[in-house]
Image (cartoon, rainbow, N blue to C red; front, side):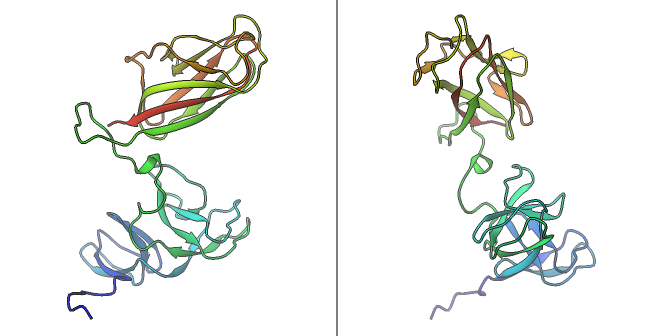
Length: 244
């Protein structure tokens, strides 16, 4: 056996930043777990379980299935099987049993301490600065374009710089003169691309220009898909990077 194992690692000792209640879920750096004892004040040491199955407060109105990924919303002090946001949605573990919609608690198998492990999505991707020679990971957004002369709004979770866009037409309907423009709020990011009855179903429609004055969508900012006339439905794919 090895002689350099410090401890099994299922429980770690944490220096409290303030009062901690026994049984509460705590996020400390990249640790997330359940306090096994209370801490009265800042500086006290308490044990944090980072493995095991614990009953956690559950967001009502959603049904958990065995193995669902669970996120801890510290502001609501509940676990949810729906991703919340980059700021609030810490990956805490997986559902250890079915929990009904009306249930206020549910069993969670803790992930093992590191809140960012598991399937990677845009919330885990680091920001990329101009001139970064290490490189970064792109983020992809796939958004539905509804039929009709409408503006459809999408609120972005993280600040994103848009690098490429293309639209795929999924129906052949539409009227003459139909156009599609992608906007940052009220400001056009792209040119107005032809999106009318002359554009066949399954056509891939590129955008010729991207305005660098408006191509960064702020965290909490709104990207608008604006269609003129009675245009048809489709799918907009955006490739971008997270930026500070």
